[in-house]
Amino acid sequence: MKFLKINMTDRTIKTENVPEQYRGLGGRGLTSIMINAEVRPKCDPLGPENMLIVAPGFLSGTNLVNTSRISIGAKSPLTGTIKESNAGGTVAAALGRLGITAVIIEGQAPEGEISFLKIDEKGDALLVPAREHKGKRTYALVEEILETYGKKTSVLCIGPAGEQRLAAASIQSSDIDGRPCRAAGRGGLGAVMGAKGLKAIIVDQGGKTPDPLADPEAFKEAAKGIVKAIKEDPMSSHVMPELGTAGLVAPVNSMGAFPSYNARKGVLEGWEKISGEAMAKLIRERGGKTTHMGCAQCIVHCSNEFVDQKGEYITGSLEYETIWSMGGMTGIDDLDTIARLDHLCDDIGVDTMSTGVAVAVAMDAGHAKFGDSKAALRMVEEIARGTEFGKILGNGPVAVGKHFNHARVPAVKGQSIAAYDPRAMLGNGVTFATCPMGADHTAGNLVGAYLTRQLDPLKNEGQVETSRNLQIAMAAADCTGICFMAFVALLGPEGGSAFLSAINAKFGTKLGPDDIQALGVRVLKAEREFNRKAGFTNQDDRLPRFFYEEPLPPHNTVFTISDRELDTVFDF
Image 1 (cartoon, one colour):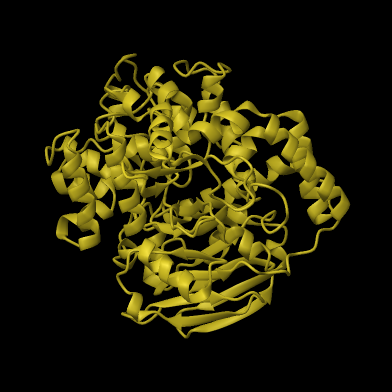
Image 2 (cartoon, rainbow, N blue to C red):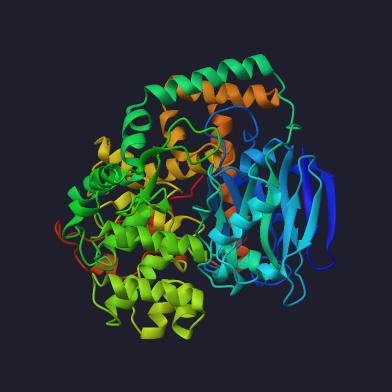
């Protein structure tokens, strides 16, 4: 267990053992607890005091399937809150196999300097001058990196948006095929990386020094149980490989909860054209891949390869949230346009969700008409060009709303909502409002409870409790490196028992379910403590007014969870 600490101010690199207070932590738990302990809450997110922490989960680097999620943490320039942004790909597994618990980026390079951080197969690190790569988009950049350092290399990088320090800038992560199509998108952490003077983190995949397992045989048996649970789960074994997360387009529209036309309606006219079923059919007809392995050690294969009419690659893993933000919110019902917007965002290095919602706000303000594909593509391209409007758009939907003096902006703490309207999915509204990191779709998403009819999405009963429990569970899961699709399959008794056994076999502990819940609570408390010190109060745990006042068609309902109830979410 070791920290790799890089000071960009004096270009020093140190390797040190993980301090006692951070032992046993990984992923979001490590980033959030460390940011709370060591970053001044009122610092400038783009200044030298902020830290950028890259942490694999504590199960990453083992042979356990679906454990290659990377957590990247910092104070967010988009929200001003603490932030953990999560991405798939291969880098978490690569760092885990080197026994690196976290890469910690401190300080700030002199203005104009830009570097690569190269980590070799022994875990030794070097800062490499990269001025010739300044301004490059991510696809061309990663292609050159792989040519230089070899195909068995994992990359985290920023595009022009990160170099411009735009508040919606992402950090792109390379997938199995070496494409930068996975994103730590939310919170603008690409801007933090750009402000540090870092263009890319390059990790050799040949590491052979992972942290030892306390009980290898027990871990091996637990891993078998986890594989069995994932393969027996209908969602992870059948729906996800065939449709990916885009399989949610049809059911969420059917529930009237698909925020469309800047959240003026709960159903997109023509949603059938951009559904998971329509996408899978189109991909098959063109010779693309509906079932694709994007992340290291994945057995779910929820990724896809979207190709054009000639069968040429456009984008990797066209996801539900991107289809919503670039399609539903903008009124665009053409999958080719949405795929090109997805590729453009990955290439420029901006969050597809924040960017799609920013485009929708601009359309709602009269800058373009809903459904105008050419206008959407033109607007997003302006981000890369660094035009005045491109910078506004790249700073997210709140910045666009201010520019047009348009108050109707679906965002919490500066971050856009996700693809579930709070007026038709009340519990998701609770999560959006109260999540310490702004509106977030992975922090505590109740869509599964609604689709299985465990909970009525339009009635107040059970929404606060379910959101609370899921936020705790996800805070704990994000410490491990497990992907959400696999984690859902492990919520049953057998899968959950195997997962807990794997954690105990890793550390030589005897943790029970209550200890995992306590870990989630610990993470959330650290995040909320940081925010309080940064000046946030319970008044920031609120949705925009129009969700309370404007009935959403077709149910014509509003968000009905009271402020008093929202203030009880974290009573633990």
